[in-house]
Image (cartoon, rainbow, N blue to C red; front, side):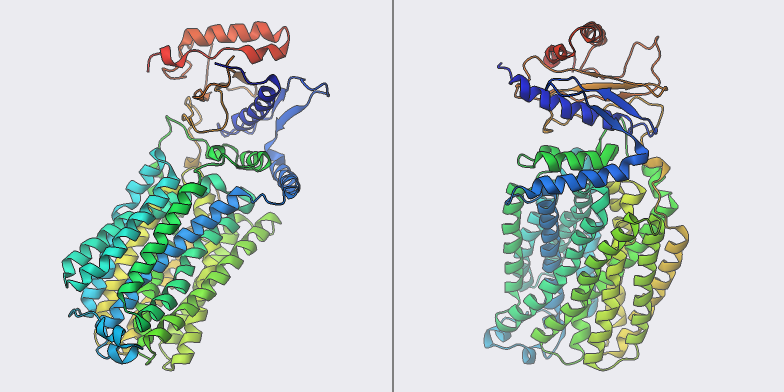
Length: 622
């Protein structure tokens, strides 16, 4: 095996030692100041790498500014975190645009005069020849979210053992293939077969949010998190902006089948781009700049580190009142969102609009929601960065205002009978929900960045109950298919909103929860990450005292193709403890010999540590 040039190895060593020192002080939850002298290899004065928790905000701001200046020198470099955010949002937009297909299609089934509301003979000929009522349609919508509910918790588990970006792309690809099959099933008139396909679609898309939050955990910095998360989640709302008008126009002029073919094909094309452009973590990205990588690494701290022997505290999560408060908000979110996504075209159809007009007007409320959702991210970040309000106060303020306006808006709809006025009131009512995107929706990261995927799996699973119930309730309450029959739906929705606001204002929180950090008195073994860009391994032993001893093992032949494992060991280590908890990959005798060798070489030239040898991983017990 060949050696890397000495200069390159030195640069890598500096970045690695800085990373280990920054992470070592934080992983046990202690406010410890660490200083390490970096070997002088450039002839300049020695520099110290320090990490002081009290000055993190100022350091992050300075690092961000330096990062932007350095990247500005490259005219064609686009920050990779922006590309990830864009592709994540585009995926959600396409998925939710695809979900509108069934909502527009059922208008053609339930409206007995649908043939008068399409624009071509082909569209008339293609009207579905099935005899379904509103209850059957409600069940068709509900069974999708039954599958969606079932796969939430398994999805959270899969994000801990499989690459989250592959889960995210794979679930969209699978749903797109099934969407293309739906017209064939509907044409055959097999209601049970259509329900089975919709259920499997829901199972596939149940992985969507756990995987999405898992990716954002690694690709968002705390100072930008509200903006990035709100931008991604806003794209889910934007799906209706694209889906409803497109579905209405295609159904009006071509036929309802083509909306399924178009949506599925576009999602498959997106998936091909996703495979080539996206990596799970910044440390895996081949083309990320050094400046952006260092900014992400320093700003995120230890929250993105995964450990072999730390498990998700499920019991603490499901019994936490702040988590339950988010669950209640998530239930309401799915209730309102699915009500509009699946039944808004039916409601507007009662005012005599054509299919194309119904699709166009149905998009207006979602346009307002997307705009307000984007704005809420900047509002939240401004309030937090300038420290005008605490995190909890910001989340409660935005959630309370957004839901309060909605509660009033649904009551107003029960008094309105003019189509144009209904569109205006509906736009304001649904648009106000965008404020909550930077309220409770981002609150998962406040409670626990480490377990954000698990949190969103739990809250989304509870929220899916709302998505299951609302189509069934709406189908039962609107059997008469009149404007007046919708009043009961709006009264019920307004009551749920009022109860949710009260519950969240009382029990919601913006503080990191005690179960978010690993226990303080156990040895932590960092997970192996063979795709990370650091080509050598380390182990770090942290004792009760403020001193942290770090041994860095660098292979003599550092150009080896397979990177060594990374171990981080923490806990109460005494002189009589013979098991350092490094796992079976490194024997105790090898560790003792390596430490003695390192201590002897420290007395000589510190640069000689470049020739320390990693124990042979292949010869040890697996």
